[in-house]
Length: 402
Image (cartoon, rainbow, N blue to C red; front, side, top):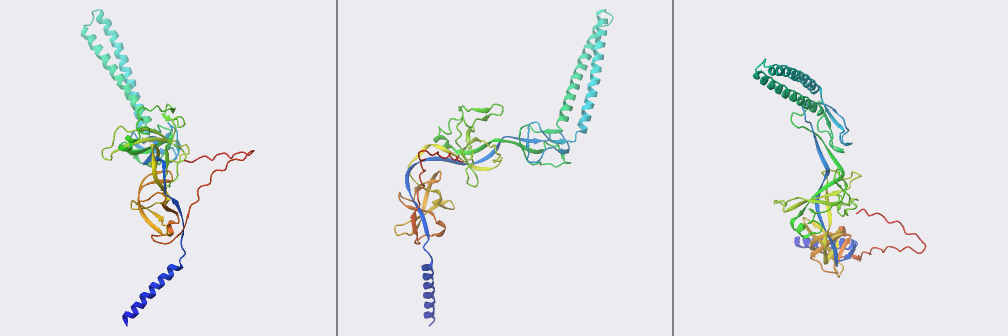
C-alpha cells in the first residue's frame, strides 16, 4: 500500500511540473551570426591617472600653523599663499642677524682704519713689519666675519620666507592635511598636494612581447619628434601629434578627448615583465583626477585577418571563463564554452568553440538556460544612413565621443 501511495505522489509531482513547464511561454531571443572578417586590433591596459605636475607642499621650518590661506580643492596659481606658519621667532632671528651684521661692518671698518695707520708707520720705519702682518690678518678676519654675517642675514630671511608656504605650480590644491594650531616642520611635514591637471599624465604597463610586436606604435618613442604647445611646461600639441589613444572609464564610457603617447620607461620591470608607458590626455573640464583608474586603448599596427568575431554582449563570463548561448537548428539553446582573443570595438575575437554562421544570442540572455526551446529571430542590421535629397541641406555631423 505504501509503495502505491509513493508512486502516486511522484507521478502527481512529475505531472505538475510538466504542466507548469507547458504553461510557461517560450522565450523570445535575438541572435547574430558568427562572422569571419578582418578587424582592427587594439591594445588595452589598466592605467592610472596622475597630475602632469604634482607637487608635495611641505613645511620647511618649525612652528605652529597660524592660518590656511586657500580653500580645500581650489585652483591655485604658482606663487599663491597656501599656509602661514607663526613667524615671530623668525622675524626676531632676522633682526638679530642684522644686528650682528652691523657689528661685523663696524669691526671691519675699524680694522681697515687701523691697517691704514699701521701701514703708514711701518713705511716710515716707526713700527716693525710684524705689526703690519698682524693688522693684515685682522682685516682678513673681520672681512670673513662680515661675509658670515651677510650669510646669516640671508639665511634668517630665507627661513622667514618659509613661514609663508606658497604653491610652486598652478593646479588644484588637495585637502589640507594639518589643521591650524598644530606644530609643523619638526620633520618636513606634508601639508597638502597641488596637481597640475590640465593636461594629465596616464601611466600604464604593456608586456615586453606587445612592445616588441608594435614597433610603429610603441617602439620608436626615444627618437619621436613631438610638437610642444607650451615650451615652459612641455605640454604636447594634441592636434599636430595625431592624438589617437582612447581612455575607457570605470563605468565603460569612453573619455571624450583622445591622448598622445609620450614616453616609455627606460627598463623592463623584471618582476612583471612589463614596460611602463606614459600618455598625456587633455583635461580642460578637469573630469580626470589623479589616482583615478581607467583603461588605455590604442590601435595596434596589425590586423586580425580572417578571424571569427561575436558581439561582446553575447559573451557571459564566469570566473574568467567565457561562454555563449547558441540557437540550434531545432530552436533550442546550447551553452558553449569559448576561448576569446582581443577585443575590437564592440566585437570580440573568438579563437575556439564556435564556427562561422553559428547563431549566438545577443538579446534575451537573462531568460534562457541550456536546452530550452526559444523563439529566435536574427537582429536587424543597422540602417544605412540616408542620402540627402536634391535641393536639401544635409544635417551637421554629430561629434563622436570616442
